Length: 324
Ligand code: ATP
Image (tube, rainbow, N blue to C red; front, side):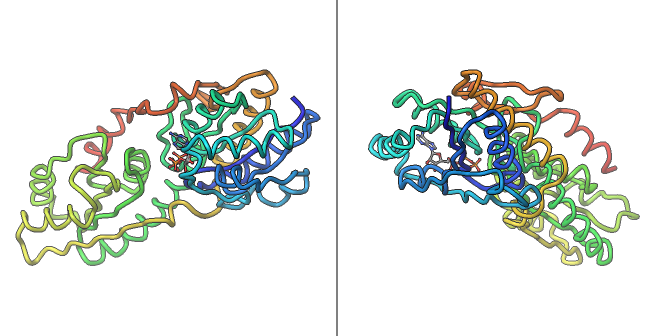
């Protein structure tokens, strides 16, 4: 293998730049030519591909977002789109790809390999931490710390005004951000898509809170079965039916995706980036380079995609236990 390319795809996440840097420099270290594909599969189809040098990735390890930009491509879901992408790669004699993204990105890469034979090793780039085959995904730690910082600030107001705050964090299908920011922020409840949400229990607990508790924070993952934080707040408010109680909602939204990656995310991204390139050199394909118990592990796309990563049961116990 002489030429490889790297791209970021799907939602951006803090640490993608550190990963791109690691891919480019590991490739150069091993004597490869490394190309950067802009805007994910969309740029692959359009031929937005540039040769990267070591200096192309200078001064980016600390930056959020992705210098290669990211995109979602409907056209790549069609055979014609993938054929155009292949033709651009073929013209440049690119023989291997490093894809930084999530489920959808890896599904696309697997189909692309089956049709055109260009191997891909993936790096887990998503704030949701929902990929099987790695303890953590690139960007998760930063997103949790961003959410935590916001929860700490909200707690100041909640405590000063004896309020109940519903804080909505990202997580359409997975509650990892909600759980970790909830534990770290001392939330009274954390509502996640993985578990049933018992409205009556929340209502009765809020009614019976000890008198000395001046505030409550309820962290809601955006994919909770009962709806958004706003909708859940309305349901709770209606059931409590006490005009003296003050309920507020804050939706954190996209601030969770941006910002400087934490040290943990930079190290994880760098390790995964290096492992992806070395995996390609060893002849691996259709797999994701992740870190499990501190070690690099390659997990096939088949196993890392669409397989729900379970929440640790003791996390849920912790939240209940620590909110008494
Ligand atoms: P995130 O976790 O941030 O959503 P993701 O990688 O899952 O990241 P998606 O938008 O689901 O993000 O997928 C990224 C891109 O991968 C899509 O825009 C599309 O181009 C490609 N892709 C997804 N699914 C398929 C598929 N079944 N066939 C071909 N390409 C696909």
